[in-house]
Length: 227
Image 1: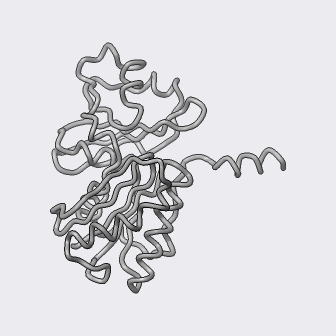
Image 2: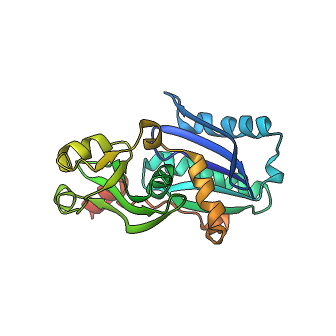
């Protein structure tokens, strides 16, 4: 399949185009500009580099969360717009934490994906890799420090934006628990493509794409306090 993927869940905006699992083009940008300013021009640049048009794509994937509330909305809106503009192109919303684990899929064994959330908690997902693909072991969740202390890891790779902090605070005495290389700790849209390519049954209608925030947005929390 010719696939396009967009990840705007974190500070890095990433887009990729793949064909049959082969990465044709990928770009990841850390910038002061908002994701809404750069993601669509980035997509067009990649398609131009590949000599493809949107109409030649077989599917499009995006990171559905967890992550930045604003970033997720931008990415999902972009994917919906592209899909509908192409006549209901097949879509897939994929866990940000699963995609981070897929970055490290060449490592055989346990992969722990972590992302810093608000107020001292983290987003956590635990996966197992066979050397090519990852499968979920512990579903994505918001995790407290107490839960991290109870996480039984003897050998694993930790990936994500706060992996060094998690390693130092909770697994410093576990030599076989290591942090992923820096490049694999950041969002890579090609990992979204790899997951969709391996499991095309994830396809859904654009209207059904929705963010998986894992916790209420600030606006929702403020509203709850007022009622």
